[in-house]
Length: 74
Image (cartoon, rainbow, N blue to C red):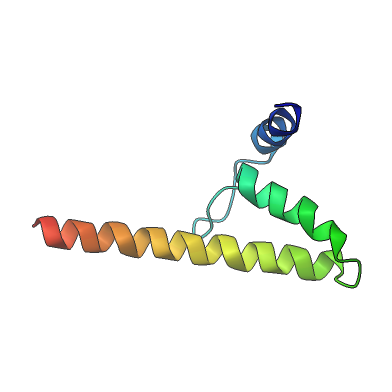
């Protein structure tokens, strides 16, 4: 519970002004970033680029999913 509390507080203190084509930072994404610390050969620049790509990809998938659901409902 304490670990999830940390993740939730970190998420809420994150700057909410994200790029329009990227989802907000989630507790799972923070957990992935912290867990990736176990791979010392990977630098933080790579981890942050990966996180940015992943969040943009999720936003695109979400937008296309909603677009498809709207099309099927019409």
